[in-house]
Length: 342
Image (cartoon, rainbow, N blue to C red; front, top):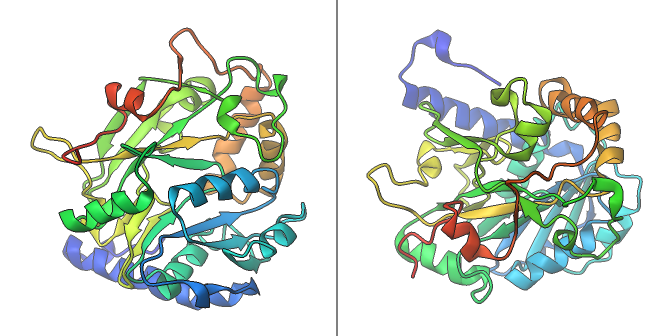
């Protein structure tokens, strides 16, 4: 990451320079993307768009696409990072998917964010854009009866440009390998449990975003140092403009105001959760692949912790675990909020 501290410039000037650098880098790295199926001419002005980077997630894709189609996503823009499991051919055949393939290093593309920032810059302008992984499923207040367009219409009317969602790790009651996940299945019929508490929240003063950690990954894989666990704060839904850029995954953006998605004066702002279907029967094999590739953050520290943790068993359920019901349950637990969206 480029740093500007040595110039002793004011923070706002450094952030502006960093944002311009991120956008310029994304534009420069666009050459790594080869169009496989470009259907972006079909995108309409009011369409909600989804931006996704994936590798070897063929088994997850049917349910993922149907889930977001049902919510109201009208077009998907995928980057496939050198998959060899049939993902490319499957996505190529989907009429609402535009697909690019990247053979380049995921790590050197800032863990795929250079590619996503380019596609957002090129195609996301003036659209509500949802940036998620194939194992992330957005839940928001009233999602059982109001489509995503109802949420984005309300956000527009409220003058909000971004919407946060905490990543909520889901897991089965038994061992991960006890029930095989099959293509097209609802992952939460298997991984239907979560941690209702055990989360820490801090504020990043420079970027202004919240930093959330905890849950089953911290207690099972990072108990030796919970602060080394993965971040759970996400800002996946943004009314995109070309002056925007993701800084680190979807954890934070520039300009800084996009990260101010909380109320510091005792009130609440509307927020959601991303149900995280990482912990299925596919987890062990996927972790071994990613550990071998070493294409993730901090020399794949997270996947090294998974590998070590898996040696002691694959059961994440504990006596405090809760079985997932609906968004109202998450609101009661303080994990999402309606804010003033009645």
